[in-house]
Length: 182
View: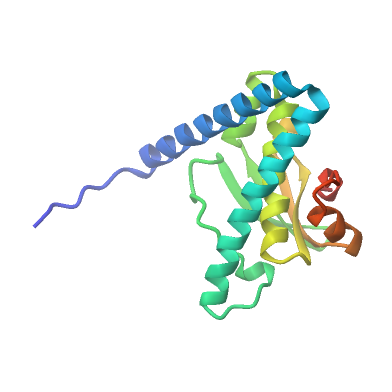
């Protein structure tokens, strides 16, 4: 019989944080390369195109799991397999102005991008949240009301209904859909 090993939670969180930091580095390396090769505007468009596809892949995976379980595609059934610790220093659910929100403090990725002076380019990664929710169910979006790479103290998220125009622009390959994240 194999003896089961246990890792202290603090050590496990540190390991997840290391991977998140590396993911932040990878995103920034790709984003900087695309901007250097294609110029600011086209490079950022390509980064957003990749992030959108990445988010759609995540959202479709979560949607398939919900469908397999016979769950409706409502926000409460959006169950993603993100780590519960290590990505942020803390995550809490709050209610602000009668709206449920999530506050993430100490985002490892956002802190790295800000340390590098590349918050704006790093922030393009965060659009994955809008994309994954809209791929799960186009009627909803997860928006950043605050974001560490934007200079805020923490990230604040809300799930909101999308408009018909937002749906149209998101699924149109040629539209800039960043405005949806507000």
